[in-house]
Image (tube, rainbow, N blue to C red; front, side, top):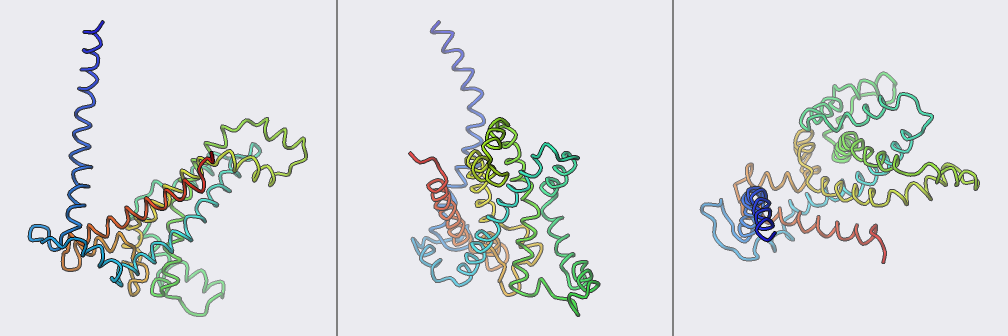
Length: 291
């Protein structure tokens, strides 16, 4: 029995060994190297040690502060809208009286499978000066001349928020819809007998029972927004005047657009890590189970 147990354990370790080695090689090793690099300055192969210089530079770097402000602005506005909208749509699509459910679910989820670059270029063309959105507003006599949406700092941010919401709302909706279908219908029947309205049932039954899923989608949506890159680069390229640039784009610019400084780029990357960790802990404290 002992020999059989050891043989089984050996076979199990053989299966685990290769994936573990690959994870160490392609995940943990780059993480450690980038952390070491964050204490250096230069182009990588000719870098020199600067200690905490890169980290102290963050607090006086106007470009980083602008990118941080833009990223947090997207986070504060877009994530709540996307979560609430996904929850409401899932509730509507979960109605047993709704016809053509499959069509509506597919249509709302479809943006999630579109390529990031493709849909970003699509939004850029829609909101161009000669785009279809301006043409529609002109035909409806809402505006008298085309609006340069992507050249105004406020409207450019609005366009990016609309693009992100359009693409990712259906992703969260699928999670909510799956969770709602696992709720016992008898719970709603009992609430209806007690005289609870549909809105009351939604607020007092649906949302509390979906609390773990809502917390999960809030965390992954927060992480995704803090790493926002493709939409900004392809729609506005960070403009006008860096008013839409995110932290991820700033990291890219530090590495490949400006004079390369891989050490400082790694420092900015770890700033995202810290922000993600702090927000995740706060979300777990606020939305987690209280003991």
